[in-house]
Image 1 (cartoon, rainbow, N blue to C red):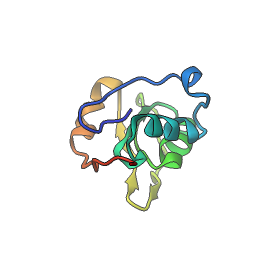
Image 2 (cartoon, rainbow, N blue to C red):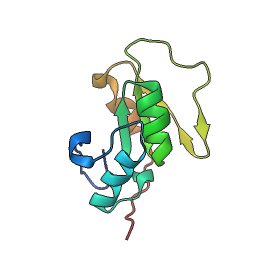
Image 3 (cartoon, rainbow, N blue to C red):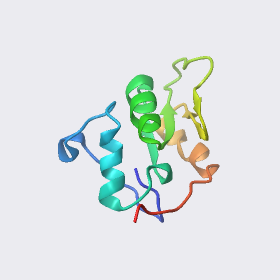
Image 4 (cartoon, one colour):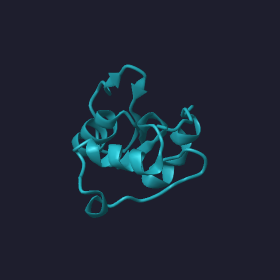
Length: 107
């Protein structure tokens, strides 16, 4: 979801033409909203689909909802990208508040 300013949204794959883990799903959202992928946070509960393929593949910031499931011992770090975790969706705001998301547009 793009968080440039206060924009928050839900973007179903049926409206995008792409579905995660294809990074084009998030890249399409970024392009349509005129924001850089790095200024977006993607919240999901599937490690391979949401975190590795979706958020990290597109250059967005991932927040993984673990649902108390074990996640890989060493969360991947790709350059400046780090995987943030929350046990439930209700817990997701806590790690999000700690983020320093760059504001910026693609144009």
